[in-house]
Amino acid sequence: LEGLRHVIDIRQFKEPEDLEKLMRLSEEMESGFRSGALGQPMTGKVLAALFYEPSTRTKFSFESAMLRLGGRTIGTESAAQFSSAAKGESLPDTIRIIGRYADVIVIRHPEEGSAKLAAEYSPVPVINAGDGTGQHPTQTLLDAYTIRKELGRLDDFSIAMVGDLKNGRTVHSLACLLAHRKNVRMLFISPESLKMKEEIKEYLKGKGVAFSETSDLDGAIGGIDVLYVTRVQKERFASLEDYDKIRGCYIITNEIANRMKGTAIIMHPLPRVDEIAPDVDSNPRAAYFRQAENGLYVRMALLKTVLGGEA
Ligand code: CP
Image 1 (cartoon, rainbow, N blue to C red):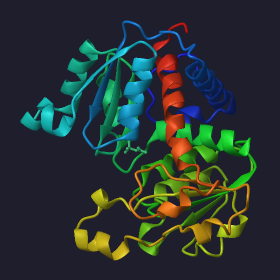
Image 2 (image 1 turned 90 degrees about the vertical axis):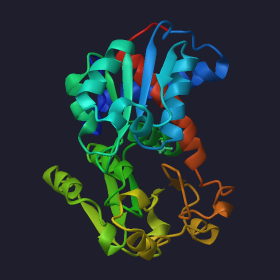
Image 3 (image 1 turned 135 degrees about the horizontal axis):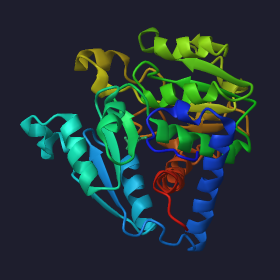
Image 4 (image 1 turned 90 degrees about the horizontal axis):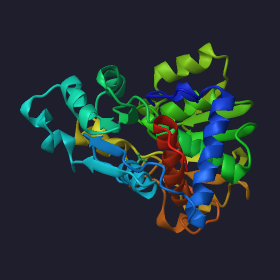
């Protein structure tokens, strides 16, 4: 992790030692937060939240992480609407300018590759908070933290990713990271039209990582350790009609959840629409709210890593 500047692609964390360092720092952040001993290592630092797409968890948790570590934040409710992008300014120019006002830029943008482009022009660290249907690396880091904490390990388990595997950037990043772990058995469950993105499957094949694909959720549910549910990504569909045809393709009910192993967990990057019935929330396997909370600790650890600062 030494020298980590931009966080753009989850494969930057493919070395198990680097990931373990970040996981341990996240644990330190969590225990410091719980005991009130975080310190103010980000005093004098400014985070710019540059979000061209909506967000609840990623934006608020990054901002909260910075504020709780003693730093400050700047941003706008919708960069697409209220930054000078609305007047035609290019992303490189926007980044050149914001990089003169802030010490770190957290960017979410509808185009794949936008965070990488931003990093090329930025005088300060850039963190990818989701680039179109590309990646969402900080989500995957908090997912890894959650699995490690809930199962007690980040190797040797089976995971089923369910839903919109074509457009969901969280599962793209997650599959790439898990390709570098030991004995993680991946099952991709989706309708035919929302199968896992080819580029990700090619990556797994190139690494010699086996995976299975099916549309049958019922047949898989009893044997897995992690059920990773995703929303059908309405915003990536060409028409509302196409979206309506496929929405609700998988709905996890409490009856389904209770057929999972007692030690299994249900994750979801959130927001959910109708993929998980509300009565699952009280099932002990439901880990998705704990997962979202973990984002705070992991993002604190990321800010400390890219900006330095003594706790
Ligand atoms: N998981 C996630 O990225 O949530 P938000 O879109 O609310 O940030």
